[in-house]
Length: 170
Image 1: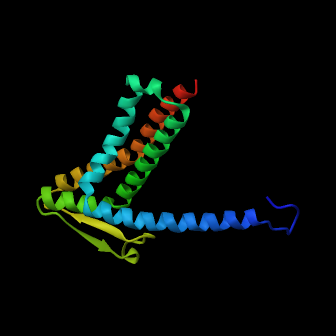
Image 2 (image 1 turned 180 degrees about the vertical axis):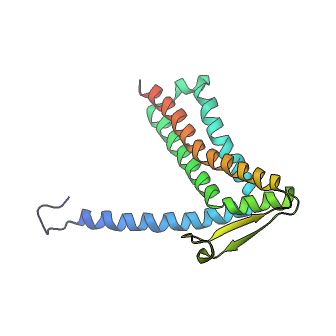
Image 3 (image 1 turned 45 degrees about the vertical axis):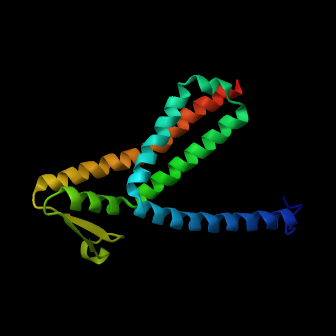
């Protein structure tokens, strides 16, 4: 980019400005997307399951052979990006989802946020209380399965879309 030490070119400045604009856009998008996720968590949960399922079904369909290289690349970009965005918002809002499920389905459920100095953790802790130990155990199983899905969905989407893209390159 630059032609020697200490020499700046306009392309360097444009690259830096573009990077910061992209960073600002990403933060704003995450805030708006997070608000939508908190308003409609069920829709995003269904989308988080549908996107990898669609990629898998499309991989096995007869239409994958008719895609051009550019079209398959854009399908991969759109599906993987949306899977990552949905699943990252889902992981960020794990406590909110756990609270909603706990209040609706588990007898005696309530949670409290504790300060980090109470439990010597670097972050505030969420303490879950239920009237029976099985309710807490079921919530732990749900949280583990939920985290697994949030990590596996983008990986499965990427793998399935990469197979479609590789097929189109041949």
